[in-house]
Length: 95
Image 1 (cartoon, rainbow, N blue to C red):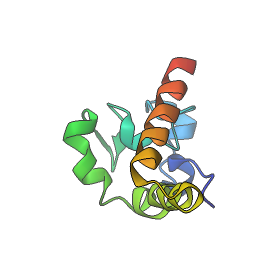
Image 2 (image 1 turned 90 degrees about the horizontal axis):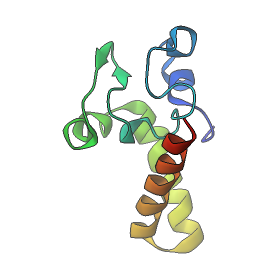
Image 3 (image 1 turned 30 degrees about the horizontal axis):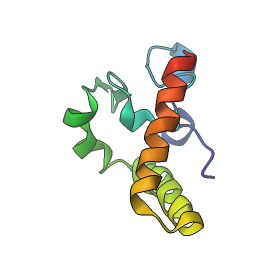
Image 4 (image 1 turned 180 degrees about the horizontal axis):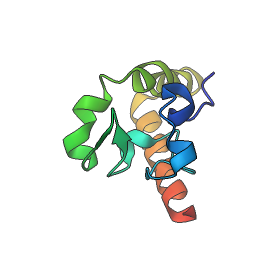
């Protein structure tokens, strides 16, 4: 289940409307993207929205699972966070 996009997990319909920056390439790193649509409202930049993201079921169930999986594979916590951030940057560049 850890390969699911945020809009699939949340069933928000943004994959149909296409009006969220997380769609179509950022659904696994939505917490890093500015301007995502969460709970029907446009969110701000990472520094402003990360507190809300950390309370989100998608973040807690899927994103943190990715962190734990990477930590288990490498034994390094900081690198797990850095790798996900790098993955997000690659996703943004692909847009």
